[in-house]
Length: 339
Image (cartoon, rainbow, N blue to C red; front, side, top):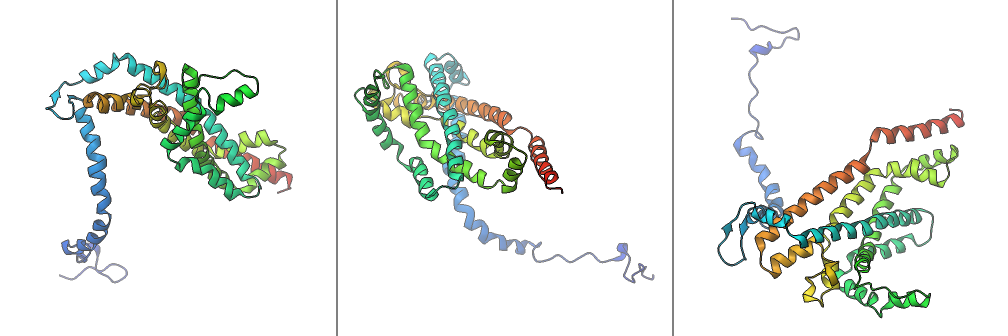
């Protein structure tokens, strides 16, 4: 039977021979993927041992009553039920939220101000960037000891207050003094880091947008809220989410600041510095209630997830609104120049 040809003279599609298997599709051709997979395998092995396994085991452990040595006893959801009735846990949740609010909101505002100052034409900008970032890489244990001396009753903070005619504050003995001192340490540590994040976002904004705002007659405040902040929204979202995650996991500041009181497990007088992670550490590693600590860890995970979603909804906003606002400024600038 004659072979049917298409208009170009080649055999018709139904008469063409199937393409032969290439080397890359044969079983032997897959060997070329082995060296790259072996090169990245150490990361996955380490992640499986030190990341994935502890996560899965903590879920299993939250349903067990275990002291770390003896046999495990399955208790189901009783750990979570006990947690909901634990007044100290809820007190630690309240303390964590209050410290988070007192530290995160001022810290993000100060970081944005510092970023604007660094973005302006000032001398020795690189020196300032390094100086602002140093607190983030400094040992928090060592700096907490220093801050403990500063906030002591006869420390530097009260000495400055007395010098200006204000009575000293019980930074480490009163409710809001404890929360304020912990919040100040968090601000000191993270404000420089977030300032550099904001600075990177500012430097990514095209200069023509600032020029369009000036041509349109916008002052500094209008430029900030109408031009800068809408385009910094992804950066602000990142800073808000990471600050929330870090702020709800406060541990070192409270543990070291009140280390003289029962080796830092009480959170200071009245347990006003007791945070969720500090209470988790106390129950798991001080009282050896590892199942209870694991349950507390997963409740903390749920809280962080909820706050992350809230931050996302509040900060993310609509990209269409941001783009339309910037486009309007550029159109008005072109109209003023007769374009």
